[in-house]
Every structure is written in C-alpha cells, then in structure tokens.
Length: 438
Length: 120
Image (cartoon, each protein chain N blue to C red):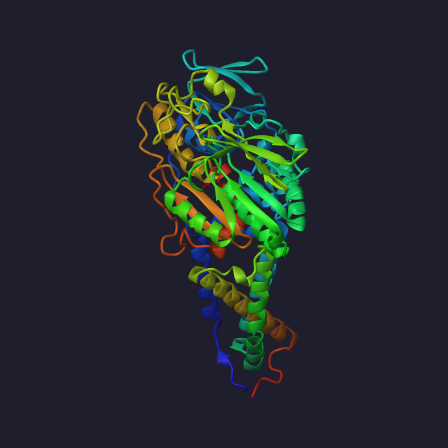
C-alpha cells in the first residue's frame, strides 16, 4: 500500500476558486428604491407584528416619521412557552428586550394606548400624549382575561396543581413546576381551552401531548388519567387535523370531552367547574389543571370603534378585510397579528405572512396607489406530539393544508424533522422575521 | 417557510448549538479543512496508509455526529418517524464520517512528515 494519488496545486486552486464563487453568489433580491415621504405612521404594539413591520418599513420609506407605542419592556418569543412549560427550555429562552429589535430612526413611546380617534386621526396614550397620524397600524396583541375564570388568579399558578403557560415565561416555568409533580405522582390531569378565539390553537394540544409523554418517560402514565375538555366540537379548527389529533389521542389513551367551558376553580378542593351549551354545570376533580383563559382585544379597540360590530362582539377584534388586513371602515388603518379580526392567524407564522401584505398596501397608499399582496389565512403550527416528534401543520382560511415542503415533509405525519423545526429552526426564523429579513 | 436565505441558515445553526459553540465548531472545521488543504498541497499526493486509517475512523465520525445532534435537540433514535427523517439522519452521519476522516487524515499527515514510510 505505497502508491499515492498524484494531485496538483492547480486543481486545488480551481476548486477553491469555485467554492469562493459559489459563496459570493447573491442571496437576496435587489431592494426596490426607498419611497420618499414625510408621512406620520403610528404602529400600536412592538411585539412580533409591530417589530417585523417597522423593520421592513424603514427600508421601504425615506423620511417617514414612524412611532411605535408599547409599554412592554420585554419582548417574548411566545412559541417557546410550550417548551418552557414542559421543562425543555429555561424561561430566559423566550425573553429579549423590545428595544433590541427596533431599528434606528424610529420613536418608541413606552406607554399603553388609551384611545384612537379614527375620525380626527389621533392616538392618545395613558400618559396623556396625543399623536397625530396619517397611517395607523393596530398590532397590540391580545389580552388574556384571567379574571373571567372565577376563583382563578395568576398567584395560584405553580402550586395546587395549577398551570397556565400562556401567561408568560415565569408562569410557564411555574406551570412546569406544577406539572412535574403530577408527572411524579400521577392522578388526574385536566387540560382546557377557552371558548373565544385564541393565539396558537395548537398549544393546548401540545401541552397535553408533552405531559403525556413526560408521564410515559417517568413510567407513571399508568397511574395517571388525562382529560382534554374543550368548548368546541372538535379538537382543532381544521377538520383533517382534528381527525388526526383524535386518532393520536385515542392511541395514547387521552380522554376528550367537547362542548364544555371552564368557568371556575376551587383551588382548595381541586375542583374545576365547567358549563355546557345547555347551561348545566359539571364539576371535575383534578390533580393537575391547565388553564387557558378567554382572550380578547385590548379595551381601546372596542372603545375606539375599531372592532367588528356584528362578529366576535364579546371579543372585540379589529374589523378588517381578511385578504388585505385593511380596516373595513377606515382606509388608513390596518390590523396585524393577534388583534386582527380574521378567522385564523393568531400565530407568529401568520404574522410572518401578514406583515409583507400590510407593508405593501401601506407603501402603496403613501404613493397614492393600491397594493396587490393578499393574505390567505396562512397559519402554521408545528404540533408537538411528543418530545422528539411533531407534525408540521400549515393551513389557510379555507382549511386547506398548505405544506411548505410538499412531498418531503408530510403534514399529518409525526416526524423528527418537524420537531427539529419547532425546537431549533423556528426561533431563528422568528428572529429573522423580527429583523424584517424573512 | 417563505424563503430560506444564507443568513437565516446561519441563525438556525446558532440557535441549535448556541452562538459560542457554533462559531467554535465553524472555526475548528475551517482550521481542519485548511490543514487538510495544506498537507495535500505540501505533499502533492494522498498518503494511502493514512487515508486507509482515516477511512477506518469514518464510522466513528458518523456515530459521533448523530449522537451530538440527538443530544443537542432532545431527541432519540426512536423519534425517527418517516423517510425524510432517515435521509436527514444519514446526511448527518455522512457529514460526520467525512469530517472525521478529514480530521484524522490531516492530523496523521501533519504529525508524520511526508516522505516517511509511505513512499516507495
């Protein structure tokens, strides 16, 4: 074995040059020229939607006065909360600073909005400022109405077997604390969902699947009973997905009851009370209870006359066109993110699709033209079915599945690659979205 | 996913491994590759004995790569659920095998000067 392959320096240099050329290929489309304007744009909310939008607008516009209004100091990567509540990530995983993501040249007013006057085109804050706007984007997110559940308060989370992962990173960690005890000792776990529209309708299911998996791994599944109790008449809004989840629930011996809404909790006796459509009450004992409260638009949306008058009247979502997200009565107002009154789309992935649409119509409006982009209701939910596996579910207004990788990543199959997307790739793409790059 | 740019891909890897570990690994990979190119250019030939030893390390590299990715993503082999998962897994193993072989070859070749016992 003494023969050697003869090689040449030239061959290596050629190879290296080819590699260098490949690396230098342009990866991004050429940016259109910035539109000069002195328009005053106010964006209510510096969460996922407001931040992603402002980062895109500063590239598209030259000279616009852009103001964001948001009292929240911390930016939360909300898709990570289910991972925190299953002991897979620390609370710090979801937390960054609001100002970390904002571009130079925009103003952030750290205040809560008190009212919008769409006729006079002003926004006033609780600190007493009044801002004039030419264009307004409403993206304040939504309100978790914890008080709507009698006997429940956030102080209870983490003890007495009560979890509430939506409430924020610390509450998600406390949820894991309460769930861990259930995982150790077994008993009865009751998992709920509100009757209102909610952000990420997959999260209640993910939490149920993850706790089920944790019980199995801890070898205490036999000592536990899991009940998923929801007001709706199926497990998911998209029928084909609902059926798939039902099959998985059956396979994993997870019980499900439809048509029941959580009304009150007695933390002392560990009894949760539900009501059904006929108004009858049903008491359920629990050792672990996961609470997701009703969700509504911030009060100022309703008070300012921006909400739908005849739909979701108890919830107050912004009255807007489902395709353009433009307000149906005020042409210079748009809604993005959780607050938008559209049938789907309260997820970060939806925001990623909505923001370019609003950007297009807003920039077109500044130029006195009409935008052409439309939002089709795209919503994505990497539905975790156990630690290490998920289903990459994507769908639109029409309840059609809209897979990003058709033929490669099957949406209704439990796959490792879908788990990798949720656990590792999602936050990176989310961050890229916040910077306006994706 | 709407578009996958190079920046996004970098961000994804930073997320998987953590920024520090990822760039340390990139630096290590670049160093090993440069070392490999260096010995190839210096020797203008492939040392077959070292190449054979390096090949023997390929399964080790493959297993290590798979173990590492599983560890970093809270996963197990039992999570492999469909054909695409098998393809991803084989891809990771293949990268580990090639990377391991290049590393072993470079180290051997750097430690044992050219000419030595492999020449006729």
